[in-house]
Length: 212
Length: 375
Image 1 (cartoon, one colour):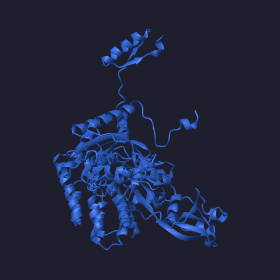
Image 2 (cartoon, chains in turn brown, orange):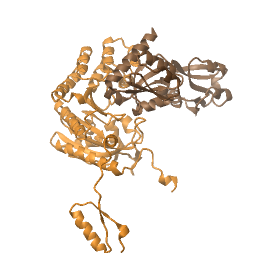
Image 3 (cartoon, helix red, strand yellow):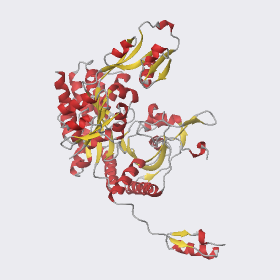
Image 4 (tube, helix red, strand yellow):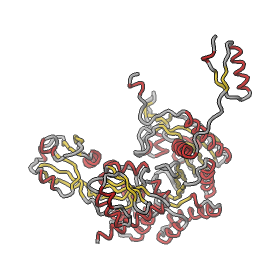
């Protein structure tokens, strides 16, 4: 029996991802979900789930330590890992946007200062339109940057837009829509084709069922 | 020691002990298999003109090379690839030789920019062979048979997968859609990452449902011969059909040789469109997160060096092979203990080295015990 290791993003996506996998037929022990264990097995012994930070999902899967993973498209756009991504899932829906203070005067900016957790997405976005920007890489609370004058705008992931509004920011443009993806390691896809094919089709069905 | 002297540049490393011995043993084993199939070893320049690699590998791949300028200002590169150099030699140095040419090599290649996050090495060793001047399924099968022999001799034929595809299956469909180069590359990337969801969206712009169905075929899971029958049912353009016929021909021979457990058909393999012209294959092994070798037909390559002729070949990553064999050896049996060397000692230096040379002449393993020597 082929055993698959599936890496799951901790945090925002975790509960939805586990729910989706359960609907796809994985039997996850309920008590283990509430604990702080970083790895659990489903009851059939066919799947091992590991819980890692979102950006690390791509790392584990790309190295083949995990065969597949569930991770946001934002992570894939930012780190550009060499992975297969056979399924877009309808969980973790959000947008990558440019946001600025509501009263910001765009004509006044010289060199645009952009604060972000996504330097590569931001660089590609402004690079495509030939705008030179000063990228300020932050690791959290990005919304503060325009408020305190560290940056003119931010490039960030937005789910409901509430944090933006509460900090007096509004969306200027949407760079990309993001949702969770099922990603697969290139070697596992070939060497464990049968098991992976089964997982893909059962997750696909479960995901489409919930859409209706 | 100061940090500037002790520090090793990213992607470089030393090899020693069992690992170094194993590397050497693998290289020797593979090169002797190549010799057994009448491939002649070729040693290429380590440094050559950048434009050669740009022609040979395509700009995107060549850009990864370490580059610097020659005394006359021309751009040089430290070899990022051996095939380009072999193809140029075939078109120039060996232009008058009888065809087909069978050439093989074992050499390090150097890449400043990694291709992926897992590709941390900037110096890696490649072992490969090229069959130039033969355009037939016979030549394709010849290199596939060599791959099989290599895997078997190295004891890696269990838990391996050689995936077969033909680049023209994709090319035929893309041609039908009449895409500009940028869209074509976007489509290629979606197929390469098996990104079905985005592929559906992309194709919604084109009304041709038949082509959409055929493209969806390319992203389905890899499998055995039935993949070809499925594909034939939904793909009708002549270029793709010819490619499918070529793989079918290979597959039927693989079936007769009872080697189907080592092969898969994966029509979604479109990673190097600018390079390959027909058959492509990749080699995967249990325990390695990425491919350990790849190859295919590149009929367009030698033309850029002035002599158009068909060619097919493959390359194996020595470092990846060593990692796997080392890991498997450790899990199976602890490293076999080598015979202890005979210590040589004595107070007279001439006597000592006479004894040493005598034992060496008989092929014995010795070690000069210099602590005991009192000159």
